[in-house]
Amino acid sequence: MRIAAALTGLAGCTLLLMAPGGASAQEDKNWETCISTTGSAATRLPACTTVIDAKSVTGRKLAGAYCIRGNDLTEKGELDAALIDLNEAISIDATYACSYVNRGRVYGFKGDYDRAIQDYDEAIKRDAKMALAYNNRGDAWIHKKDLDRAIADLTDAIRLNPNYAKAYGNRGYAYYGKRDHALAIEDYSAEIRMAPNLMAYLNRGNAYRDSEQLDRAAADYTMVIKLAPTDARGWRNRAVVRLFKGDNKGALADYDKALSYDPNDVFSWNNRGQAKMRLGDKKGAIADFKKALDLRPDLPSAREALAKLGAAL
Image (cartoon, rainbow, N blue to C red; front, side, top):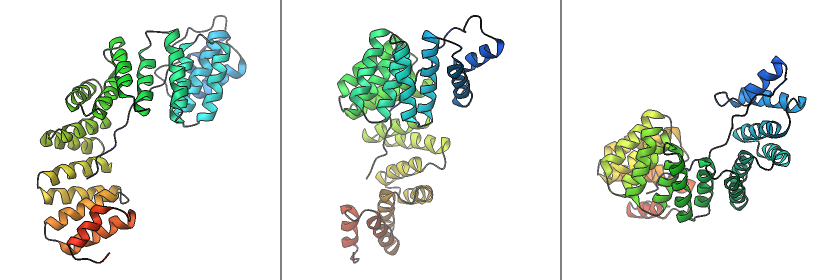
C-alpha cells in the first residue's frame, strides 16, 4: 500500500534594510513597502519595481530591492524572471548573502541542486550565522539523496535558530529517509509545537505508521483531515491505517472520501477494492480493481486480486 509523499521546506530571504536618506515621502513609502517583512508579494512587488525603475536607491539598497523582488517572483512561480533579478542583485553587490540564498532557491525549484548548493555555499561564506542558508542547503542535500550532509546542515540551522520550525521538519524528513523513525518523530513533534501545519502532521503520521504506532498515526491523519478536509491525503492515509488494523468498514468510508477528492489516485481504488473484498462485496471489489488497472495497467496487486476473485482482466 502506498504511503503519502512528504515534502521538504525551502524558504526565501527578505532582509530588512534601512530607509534611504534624503528621499521624498512617496519614495520612502515605496521603499518601506518594498522591504516590509510583514507585507505580501502583492504589495512588495509593485513597490520594489517602482524603487528599481526610479533608481531612488543605490548600492546595497538597490541590490536589496532586486533581491526581494526576485524572492516574490519566485513565490509566484516566475523563476526565469526571478533569476534575472537575483543575478542583477549579485552584480550590484556581491557581498549580499540574501541574494545568493534566493538565487539558490530558484535553482532548487528548477531542479539544479548543484548550482543551488554553490549559491548556499556563497551565502554562508558571507554570513556564517545565516540559519536560512543552512536550512536551504540541507534541503538541496536531501534532494541529492545525501541525507548525512543534509542532517549536518539542518542541525547547524537549528543550532543557529533553535525556534526554526521548518528546519526541524526538514531534518525530520532526512531522518525518516534514513528509517530513523524515532528521531524523525522527535523533529516533527518539535515542528508541530512551534508551527503546527498539515505537512508536519502528515509526515509524523507516516513515521508513526512505519514504526507500527498505528493509533498515533491515525490521530495525526485525523488532524490532517481536520486542517484540510478536502485534501485526499488525510483520508487515504488514515484508511491505510484502518486496513492495517482490520477496520474494513472504516477504511471503506475513508477511501470513499479520498476518491471523492482525488478520483485519479490508483492506490485508493486498489485499496478500496481490498476493503470491499474483505467485506464480501465481490462485485464492488472487482469494479475497483479494474478502475485501478485502468489508471495503471501494470499494477500487480490489482491483477492478483482480480485473479483471486476469478474475474477476467
